[in-house]
Each structure stands twice: as structure tokens, then as C-alpha cells.
Length: 107
Length: 112
Image 1 (cartoon, chains in turn green, yellow):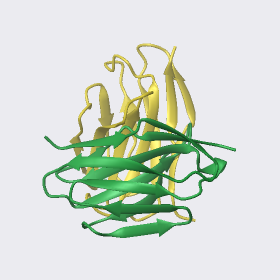
Image 2 (image 1 turned 90 degrees about the vertical axis):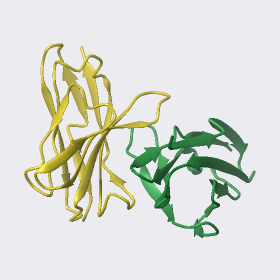
Image 3 (image 1 turned 135 degrees about the horizontal axis):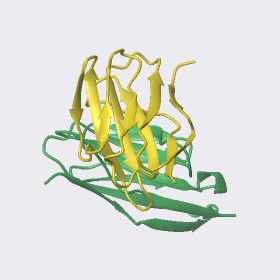
Image 4 (image 1 turned 90 degrees about the horizontal axis):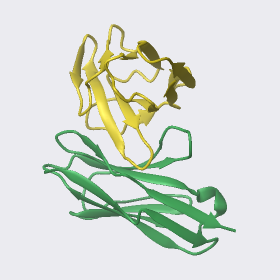
């Protein structure tokens, strides 16, 4: 059965404390893996698309990587404005979303 | 300025009433989607459409209906048959069914 699992469910970091969020997936015929940021009460904001193992994408303090079984979203020296829920999704037979990691960055 | 718009932002409904949520996009995307988001849960697919005049049920279509008469528009009707409609509703669109989806700002529906 196709599924997407994100961990941890919640993460609290001190400002400047780097860390990684995990997205594990089992899907038949991966066509793409996507990362989104969602602020409370708003729609998800698209961040990255990864298509194949070994691929990496960067944007400011965020870097997404992909292996054959999982993806990581690395956050380097986070700031309070990085606080949000980060969603992972995969495209296989259909689109599957994970339940997200709620990130809080404390000043 | 391209994007996806949803209206209204907040909607209140009395039990037994049907309500329609609007979703419009000017990104020239072929595919459009409706999701429901509840606290602590992931996005659940209600309906999707890959082309005008065609749409398919998602995982939780019961109590909902859609139409796709124009490429730009994909309205969602929440009927009185939906037993627990209070939720945050998100519309999305993409070029193809495999590509990244772009989301609207959402509509929060509350049943009184």
C-alpha cells in the first residue's frame, strides 16, 4: 500500500540550531516528491520538487534531498520566521500527502 | 498576477443547507483538486479533475459534488448529506496529475 510518513510530528529548535525533517515513503513508481510549507490558516506553499534519488534542491536556509526510500528537509541556522508546518507529498498512482512536521523556532 | 483564488474565506452553514465553495485559477493548469484538512490530519482528497467536463472521486467524495465546465473554475458543493462538513477546504491546481500542485488560500467552513 502506498503511503507517506513524516517524522517527527513536532520539532522545537533554538534559533540557529540546524536540524532535519524526514519523509519516508512507499509508493509504486515514484514520479515526484514534493515539499510544502503551511502557515496556520493558510494554504500550503510549494517549496521543492525532487524526481530521482541523489537529487538535491536548495532555497535560502532549506535544502531537500532524496533517496530511494526517503527525503530529508534540512534547515540550516533556522530563524523564528521558519516556524510552520512542513508537508511532504509523493506522486505515484495518485498524490499522497504526509501529515506534516510542525516546526517551532524559538528566538 | 497568476494564482489560485478561493472564496469565501469563511463560510457558515446551517444544518441541512447546501453550500458552494468557489475555486478559480489563471495558471492555465489542466488539473484541479479539492482537499479537506482537519486538525491533526493530513490532506484528504475529495475530488479531482484532469480536464474540462471530466472529474473523479477521491478518497472522501461522499456528500460532496463538483463541476468543471471551464478550465479556470472548479466549484465544490458541500451537500446536506455530508455528515461532518466543518473543516478547512483547500483547492489546488497543477499542469499535469504528476506535477507539483499549487494551492489556494483555503475556505474555512463551519456548520452551526
